[in-house]
Length: 176
Image (cartoon, rainbow, N blue to C red; front, side, top):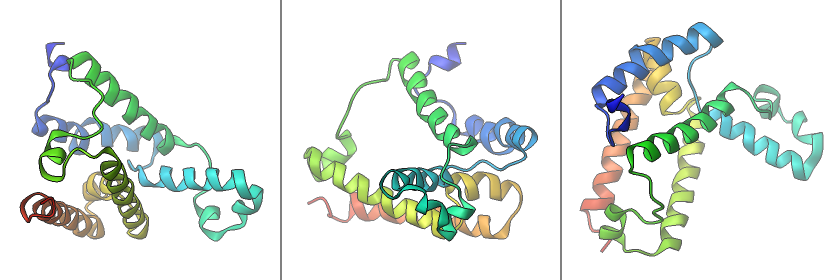
């Protein structure tokens, strides 16, 4: 039980638990579907668009394949948010921070810039995930577990892109 109150868990144990251990196998066993999150955001955009355009949204080819509705992936995203909150709360690490210290040390403490960059970065990630047919969880966890070549290529480039982006942002003077 003490393990649950730790601020950081071993990435090796968590990786085994998510990737080759419990979570992925349970997902396949219970739902017969791989873990994935990015489709939930596509479905959410369709639900938001439906508010403004009505049922015309359902006529789009994209939304015929990814029906704008609440499904198990959507609930997974909600579960991730709730689980993250519970984990941070019981470990005593929860606090509201608009600008993390790593960001403010490099780019300053302007909240608006941080929010805009986060939204633009999220849009790039979402677009890339939908374009490649999956996100880090879909390709990186489920796809690699199934030994899909496309997922292994995607996962390798997720890491390469993440490392390069972090290096450029925090070591090249972008932040001044």
